[in-house]
Amino acid sequence: MTRPVDLLLGRWAVEGGLATRAQVDAALEAQGRRHPEPPLDTVLVEAGLLSPAQVADLLLARQDALHAIDPRAADRV
View 1 (cartoon, rainbow, N blue to C red):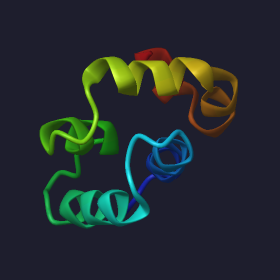
View 2 (cartoon, one colour):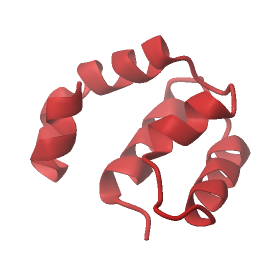
View 3 (cartoon, rainbow, N blue to C red):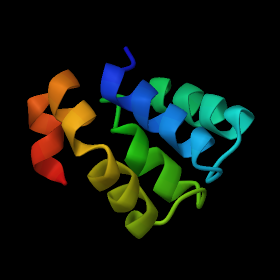
View 4 (spheres, helix red, strand yellow):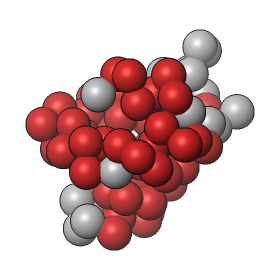
């Protein structure tokens, strides 16, 4: 089951021009096939779509929104 924070990260990556909607959708599908499901940022980095630095920048820029959705996820940043 996709976590809300993963959907937000995917949306932010598309809005920021870092990935296309199709790429994020494919990453979400790949995420769903793995058990346990890794965080979407891990899948995006493993696929070479985003660098760890790009993920960190996305999350830091939206830390307040992230904390409101999942306080534990915000602590990873």
